[in-house]
Length: 81
Image 1 (cartoon, rainbow, N blue to C red):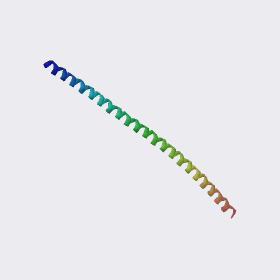
Image 2: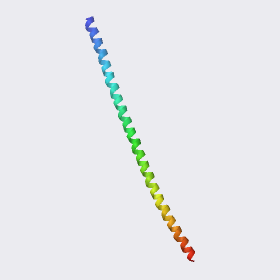
Image 3: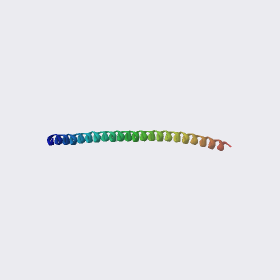
Image 4: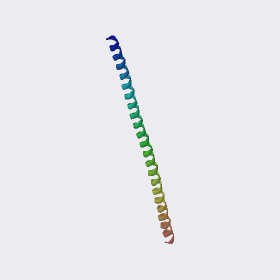
């Protein structure tokens, strides 16, 4: 009977260790997945911010060019008066 109890306790310890290992692995896998999503989100936000900045700079450049043209036209009209 003592041998059976000892075997049972050993099996119980082994099962507990195996379950803990599986749980630890699952937790690590979940943490890795969350980190990958976070990294991907950072890259996406960075890319969107860069594109938004590029488009804003282009729009500002076009507006500045147009304003320069309008000012030149206005100046030429003033000179002829």
